[in-house]
View: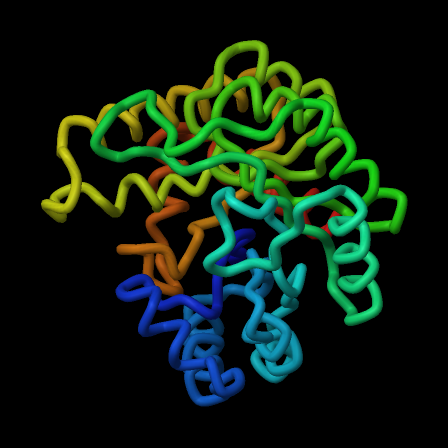
Length: 282
């Protein structure tokens, strides 16, 4: 029984603009059904969407039970105006506006809150992110507001200090988590955060010619080293591909393979525990 704890039904792993256009007039059922059937055939029983503002994940949640799949979605991810995430999520400028979006998510039936609190990896330059993370105080308020509304919180977060701040704020899961150090890993361990490292977004870039190959391999090695270290601390790890991201098709099994490379023979037990915690929290 497989699960993917981070997908984007709205995207297709090839051309994000064209994928979004597919659903601009409303979620396209034929596409969603074809993807859900692919997951069903591969034995996936749980999917957690990263959200979109066109209602695609919401529609997938409605259809998923027909395929024997439990589906969870935040509806749309919430991102600060001028920062990463605006292409797919709902934007806010102030904490008051953010709180209003959280309340709206509650009214519209969202399963959890997803916050965008950092940039992306620059795959051509090891150790570099496209933008710095939000201040720790602001991250704490974002998590607090969502928790006060009864939501679990999924955080798109890269960079050691950003992830450490999110963990100390009580975030429920960290997605991606590039370039972590011992303090960030320990904070996630101490606060019971589930880490979904989405190694497929790195590993699937190898040999594609789009990014500097040595850099991609170094980023992957660094991430896998941190995965192993975190597991050694007793940290919670769960599989999530970020399916829909470039070079990551829906129904990809590469996440399990990449995590197994990092964790060795303990992989199945580690991932089963982390996936169970995700399903409990979300």
